[in-house]
Length: 178
Ligand code: NAD
Image (tube, rainbow, N blue to C red):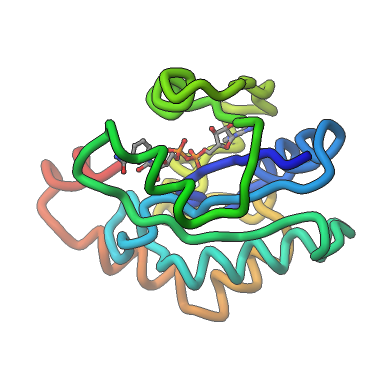
């Protein structure tokens, strides 16, 4: 039995790890779609799909999750929401269950006849990509929100300077970017 979780994971944080662990209590294998794979180098989507694959692979290993339990598949966005589920199916191993807290993702899979589960959110005020990116920009404590291996990847790719450079725009533009 296989389940699917899709997320932008900008960056991977402890909430993603918790939800992946809870999905693996329900199903044998989890497919993790790295959403908006074409996006990078913006304040909202600073990391490339490849960097996010690296973060996730290392975080799952750090958490003792065997590589035989998951597939990580980058998925680019498509202009038409109505064909997105078919686009995902083309790219992934077959799956029966969907796990998502995103209402558009839930709606599209429900309309395609899938069983959709909304997993509980863990410490959502802090475990969110927006919060991690804000703290990186403001020199706050972002490292406590992500697995250690993800912090190592962000430092390795010079992600802190990248986010700070991306923020060197007009203040009005920054408000829209987050
Ligand atoms: P996200 O990284 O914010 O979240 C992914 C999932 O992780 C959530 O659904 C939630 O279940 C879980 N999660 C996040 N924080 C958590 C926490 N603190 N505790 C527990 N679980 C937590 O990503 P997202 O924005 O939901 O990603 C959806 C992706 O699907 C985007 O890339 C979007 O572009 C894509 N999409 C594309 C189309 C299209 O191309 N037409 C249509 C719909 C969705």
